[in-house]
Length: 553
Image 1 (spheres, rainbow, N blue to C red):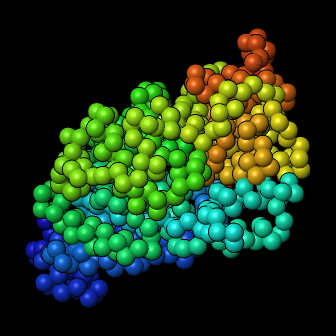
Image 2 (image 1 turned 120 degrees about the vertical axis):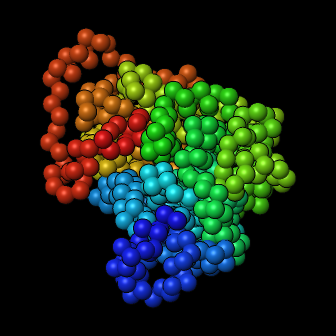
């Protein structure tokens, strides 16, 4: 066993003495030691139940003959961090989580790992760590939140809550109506109930083969989630016996499968940051261009919130991610020969998967659209690319040309939006919010929700070198690369410049002639860094561009 280095033989006697200090018995130390990486805390709704999940995982490990050893991982609630300096600390935790988990797993030489994440950066951070450590590993998340119910009986969710703020500023919703959303949008523990980033990544963990069936969709409050956790604990012991490791599972073909499922589900644009970063840890490079190629042949089969009116619990009842994958596999869009944490191939796992609700999961012959949920645009404004969740864009905004309204921070933009200074036809440009310029690439749900809540989502586009929440809808185009702080064209845009967006053609152009752009580039001076000390300053010096997944160099 890998753990023998800390528990077997005369040289390990000091190590054993410390393990005995923890209360472990000789019999427990003779079994494989399985690290249980639990992200439980008391500030993230998606993580408040993870102590229960961890106990279930440990029960499964013990039942299968292993000894569980729990240690923590951090997590940030993006919703609580939204709209202030805290959001600069969200994306950067992905690398802190990966680094600290690697350190704990390597320092203590576990034979296997069970990762228990749930929210936005926690899932990819732990997947990155799993790839680095490369010991047998199973993922089991905390599960999605149930949808909320308003006083009138209609269902709701966090994205509606943010849009309600915009509606209130626009005079379309009174104080009582706002309070109704406030008290009912998030009714249970779990990752917020739409196809936002957390649920996107938990579904893709299933799709990439690192989690058991139901990981992405079984609600947090269902007892089936505890049974899943016990099975995850049991299954890691099978992987230890068979020596099946993350890099045996997370192959290039598996990442292509994950991107295909991403397009079919209509996942968050943040997956375009996280999948390349996870692949990078596996020695695999995913390009933006590949995303468009996959999207071009993958129909969009699901319209969960914010794109539609269905929620994660509806997807689970319809058959979950495996039902979506079965639709794709039948059309020949997935490589079903890939290995998974079940110890079986994807094709074997999909036997018996049934789509129980063709309105929630459309068939290949009746999709919401013939192309996938995400598109990558390129042009002189984003030579290296930018990303839009096209499944959540109104038809009227798939092509749009309008004057730029330029802001050098999210805070300035949101103030202008709330003050009614943005009008139909405008293209809001928010820059110096990228990985380096932010630093930390803030997620901008406040401005996009304000625009939607004010009823302008069919008339106004928003472009940024920052990123968006999975709860964002409308013509919200993020990850513009190169970013402004790296000398990208977005830093050269002037107020009133015309910008042309053509999502079906995958183009985005600043309609300014080359001579003028050359003059602006020659005169451009990078602003002083906003933050010059601490972790964010170090992060800004090391982070790469968004089109590379904002990995640290």
